[in-house]
Image (cartoon, rainbow, N blue to C red):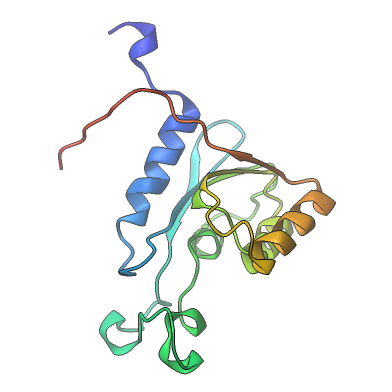
Length: 159
């Protein structure tokens, strides 16, 4: 295998985030993330879903309607899940790879946890107040956020 046949760390961690997203039961938006340490080790993973012990079939997955009948009051975002799932005691200096740009609530958790860089796949809600607030918070706290730049490599994984 030639050296250029290997994937980069960004490709590796974003690939893990995309794979994690596939665990989400959300029929509308599957989001995954991977937190990596400064020395390129996986610290934690997450995807958007209900809190532990809550049955996916007993809660709504609707995007519109009366708030208590939509998913938004119940779902834990991938970033917060990964931070809460972390078994260590310090995420300072880590990077978080996430398939969708974090909302303002996740941005607060990212900042508080000490994560210093966000690499995101999509920013489809850039015009929402939540993402505008998120970027303002991240910039004020000095958290770098950059769009993932995929290579032209096509990978196929069979499981």
